Length: 485
Image 1: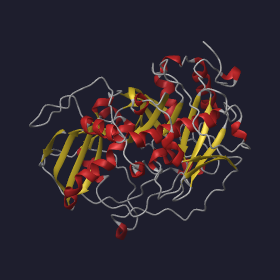
Image 2: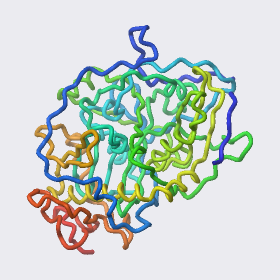
Image 3: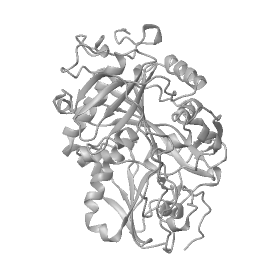
Image 4: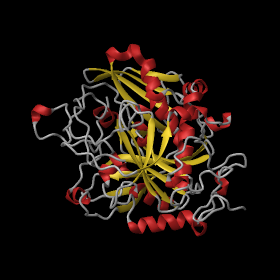
């Protein structure tokens, strides 16, 4: 593991937009404000069930168990302006460590469970799709577009719900909370005050609350768009005091997954609080998303993930790394900053290039990756055999269960995109040739489950003799999976 230990760094504290809303009650400092009690939304009818146990028997080639061909598609910054607005392509916060450590204040304020949902509640994927349409990256349409929060709620100890939307050739996965403004109670520590002091927004994007990135890669024969928050970037003139700066690669990070517990990692970082228009969006109002152009598209190999821990937990660094590496793998982030503190005084900051660590992890945990890829392929196949473009489903899993249920969405659930953006997105996806995203020996869909409910509506066309390839399809054939080049 290459890196360095920073024993402190004085410099002028840069102006930076805070990522939390200070509580009105001074006695609550250090504790985030809890969400109001929420009743669970009703469940739709079960159409299909996926057994977690059966996933381990999937027939996959070794090359299906690693990520390759990673490219940055688009990026944007969420802004703290009163109106809902983003800056495209934006840029992450720059790593600007203090020359001399200073005592930081413990986190306090409101921190949202799902940052993208809280930023634009009515249509949570609107900013991401708008940024792709604005950038018009050469990396075009893929088979799967989802947020990493999908995996963040996937541990056995928690229940979760994920909305599935089919638009053209793309399956969209959107994690569902009881409310888009659901907050995380009892936040303690320095996970937000540390980046506020040790990173700086560049002048082009001052006023930002977060930086969001969309990357594209191949995994298990699927082309995947992945949306996640970038904690920051290492500037090109930055270097370790004792070693050379992290080496650049061709953008591919060959890495790995760990056991089921690894999927419990969840990215939580607070955007600005919703204004009155956004709060009303949950009840039917819809503020217009404003888009501005500024910033620079930073290369993926400059991005870092950041975590803070107390000094008395240094002896469990291996456990911390095991917990974090799955996120670095899914996000293809090669740099990791682990900062240790003593009651908010950070005197041991470790900046690490973790490419080798995640690569070794991948080799050891291929069995878990196999189950993960098999699950993604089943979700794609079930969605495709449903209603083609326009299909709307929900994935649910109860606490402690080994069954993932595929359900109908209840009626009148809001769309994840506005109607205008949805039409533009579908047109753009349909116009683009996706065949270049798939090699000849990778199928875009895979027949996995043999334990299907024969009465399920989703069994239509699902039991055909071979896997489907949708690269030659379009909306005219309802993405049948049988079209030839």
